[in-house]
Length: 84
Image (cartoon, rainbow, N blue to C red; front, side, top):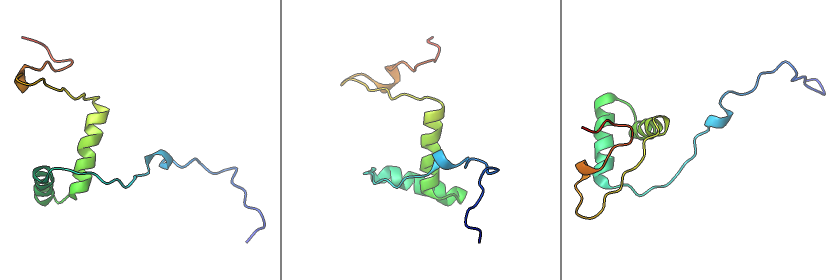
């Protein structure tokens, strides 16, 4: 093996910013059951499906809408949606 390796012709790693991190979350059992059922239906691991959903939320810049007590969820305006 040479004493020095020449990396001048190498290309940058395109995956450097896409490293996954392990996290611990407390998620309602019904939500886990839903994603596990989707995993069984599609053959895709449920963790991957959850990550796909979170990625979709980030890419589409979805924002959470919090409702006040007594306000029906369907009365909350959706950002960017046309109001009729």
